[in-house]
Amino acid sequence: TWFRQKPDAPPLMPGSLPIIGHSHLIIGDRKRNHFKYTANIRNIFFCYIYLYCTISVITDPEDCLTLVNACYSKPYIYGFAKEFLNNGLITADVSVWKNHRKLLNPAFNQQVLNTFIDEMNVQSRNLVANLKSEVGQEPFDVRHYLITFTLSTISRTSLGLTAQEQTQIDRDYAVAIENLLALYCDRFQKVWLHIGCIFDWSALKRKQDKLTTTLKNIMNPIILKRKSEMKTKIETTHYDDTPGKFKPVLDQMLQMSHEQDVFTVDDIREHLDTLVAASYDTTSSALSFILLVIATYPEVQNRIYNEIQEVLQNKDDDFSKHDLQKLVYLEAVMKETMRLYPAVPIVARQIDVDVKLKNCTVRANTTGIIGVHSLHRHPLWGPDANEFKPERWLDPSRLPDNPVLFAAFGIGKRNCIGKLFGMLMMKTALAHIVRQYHISGSIHNVECEFDVVLKPVTNQHIQLKLRS
Ligand code: HEM
Image 1 (tube, helix red, strand yellow):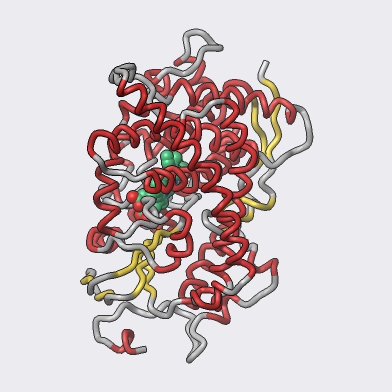
Image 2 (spheres, helix red, strand yellow):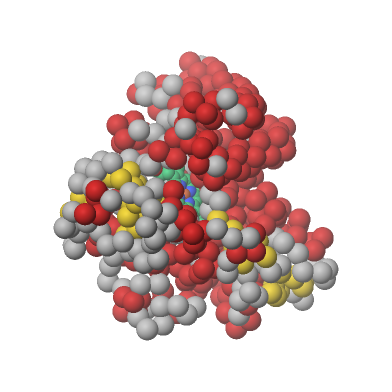
């Protein structure tokens, strides 16, 4: 109330009642909590407003940029994952984040990513092979196939694992990390467990400790083993540092740690766990939406298929970096889907200092929410902002001038470090799938759930037919 009384305070969202604010809008049965997509987003915003009276949802592109350039901290709920991810980029305090992000940025540049394409092809072929069991069958939920694909690709390229280590990641690590992320969501919804001393005595905390220990016990031996192998190679001058050669992110961090004395073993584990946690749910969810869109529009699917046929000389070859660059229509479809159905529909920042926006001031010690979903359907996209039109991405004059309006990977300096990685991994997988299968289904009646990311959960089934 004190904040709202200030003359330059942000306007209050409609629907607020005295004392209870917007909380009446989130009371309802399970069905109501499974809103259709747009309603679901509204629900999320209300939920936030209910939980934190001092929250501002920002949807003006210039204001969004002003805010993310002024504030790099994350709100306190990110602290739920601190015990597990600590100095990892998502949860790190600003001083550590600035330093580590600068060090890690080169590990995700285009040159390095090009060396990951072979592995992406291998994992995409595995995905296509796994999907074979669904060909000609009833409609099915593709999500768990996509999770397996994403997890294998990210762990192979980040960790460079042996087949045996990879099996453990696919089996034990995947289950534990999924359970841990679900646990954070559970805590988020039980507001009383936000209070540290109450949470510390809860069954949820005991479960969290067990899962965190399991995950640390899987990752730590992998790092220590590789560290000692690398040390031996460096000491015996057998270490191959040829530029352009595949080097997993783990090896890049170990090399930095050796040469610049920067990362501890704990830091490295936290970064690797963060990469897995930040990538597998987001990427598999984005891929689910894209497959659903491709399934919905047969003419779009045909155009993608024809583009693939034109680009590949030998129809069964792997996709090279040049082939992938030429798949411009596929990329347009990916971006347009991420615009209409962003896997991360909101991004949050802790506001550390008063920030003056165009028409109001958001106060220090409150939370700012960047409304990604609203930016993506902003009137600046034109009168067809709510329509699926991939062609707009092929003609720069049809795109809004302000790039902030596409925020699927966040905006500003603390945006997604895996943006290019995610796009490359998804493009390779989609090209392999569309080349092999004809997909049918519909996105129109899909209902979504929002936990860590937004994902399709009802009416999301697709069907596959082998292409002749
Ligand atoms: C389609 C796939 C993906 C989507 C939609 C996505 C989206 C996002 C978004 C919206 C953020 C938050 C930015 C912010 O707070 O402003 C983020 C952060 C992050 N993402 Fe992604 N991401 C994807 C894939 C990946 C992949 C493949 C990786 C790893 C290789 C990754 C690693 C990260 C990390 C480490 C952060 C934290 C960055 C920081 O705070 O410096 N993401 N991502």
